[in-house]
Length: 373
Ligand SMILES: [Fe+2]
Image 1 (tube, rainbow, N blue to C red):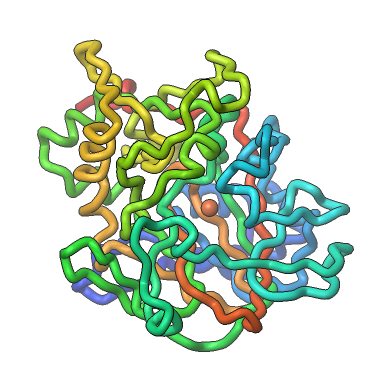
Image 2 (image 1 turned 90 degrees about the vertical axis):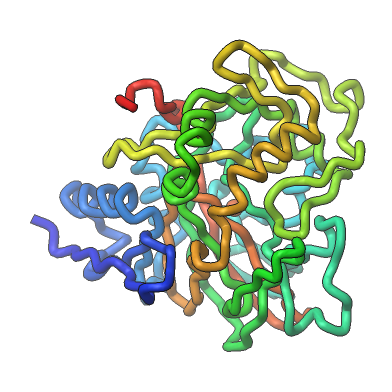
């Protein structure tokens, strides 16, 4: 019998957030099979689970717990990107020498951590990715969602099931206003450097019946070498997908393309425990839509408009859970049931240190086919 208990997060009645839980009494370094069963069940029921006061968790224990969700999966979830310098994922990651599946991310200068020396970390800033930016003079008070995404290579490797994040060092206390800047006036008060989560299940549930059917029967094709393909393109100000200005790297300028690694995935992914459908699309590297009748939409602007129309309601301010990080927070999130985004703009001397781990899965997510509709 496990002593672990699961306490769902609670939100005001006006909130549309219906996920998240705190896990109590878990010894992450020594988890029994019964403990893990409780944790696994909690992850698939609550999508984001938080273990408090876990500063002492070793990189090894972090990796072992991450791998336990899929023991057959062993490699890093984003894959070894060929031509890493051109990839948009390149600058944000550093690896722990003795546990290379665990990355260090954050902001500021770290002289030494777990064998990593003189690490200069840089929190991603929307000005390097968005088509418009918040003026410099407002940059400490206002911010944006950097990039809504799923942690996934989307080329060759299957999307990781879970991502684990340990907050080792968190600068205190400022808050910022996260602006959508899409003409809606939407904005959200957030803790500095929050990680924002939205539920793929809610994103699906709030669609019209017609859109639900479209989402259930359509597949999305991702670009080959997706993060190089979009490396010169710019994001919408909401961080939810790209604007179409023709800046995608032409396919013949990408590294050699292996056709069998190109991914065509369902728009909706089935939860292995609840059976619910999540609208799970990584909007930035999406390139084509394959409709039920065999039509392929390859007009990139149109593809992006359709995906944006389906996803935007799901990131409305009341749908967002903005985790207020405290040092020692160990968060597991269900990468196949939600979208997440880095948020915030740090000053250069604000030191933030996190450890992240995810592992490419041994299998692809299940689509909606087996669900009676
Ligand atoms: Fe991520």
